[in-house]
Length: 387
Image (cartoon, rainbow, N blue to C red):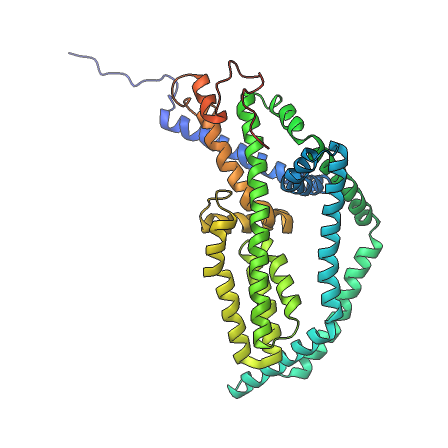
């Protein structure tokens, strides 16, 4: 007679799938904590990071001009100084044109907005929707001074904000000067300190990031100017006032993908509606749609070229996320930074940092990245890419 088998009293054995699930869960929690810690760090260092980011954008954009001046016989420091003077002059001129144009024609803007409100009330009244216009105007008049007083008191009364602005301009100009004067040397220095990334790969990543930023800024400038000219001519033909201001607003807002076109177009349509009624507004809307639709697509292929090859949905989500997390600056730079991240992911996979190394040897992977075959990582690349 056989004895009954005893039940196992040994320790509980965790199934492999549960162990993998637990490891993945802790990894996700760790990544989330790191993400929020990074956001907190960015918020704390905003005064330093924003000038650095803007300096990197401007430095990448205008470095070819500094190189050209140096090739013409100027000392590098003098070429850098002249480039910075030109950048400051352009920024001041654009701000002056926009601010002076808007304030100079503020009575016209107010008149057109009042006319737009009258037209909207008449249209709603014709469709049996009664709105007390005087009450709306009274509410706007009451709220307006409070908003203006609040903004002025914050700007004037906040010593920290003014100090931060001055500090940011000072830091930004200094970083810009370093990038223009010795951007390639800075890139080489950084590439040697990005271990475990091989030095040639790190340098190529920095060079490509500079190229993507430069291509994006110049491409956006060309597209913005084109859209601004089309909107200016459309407003001029339709007899909409403030045609030049409409064109400038359309150009400036174009640096923010997707949402910039909506803001610039809404401004133009509101002015058109206030000055010429619903028909003029619809015609102006058609001009805005054509400028930011078919024509912009054609110009983008030429202006941006190979700088950014991203799906429009990717640009939309990146711009939205950048704007939510980092404000206007984040919305402007989100698309090129997404491109930089994608390029970095591909190149790091090629050298085996994210999974199996691409093809045979490290030399072959670096050949794919840098276009040369360095003997060992950490040495100068044989053919230095252009930043």
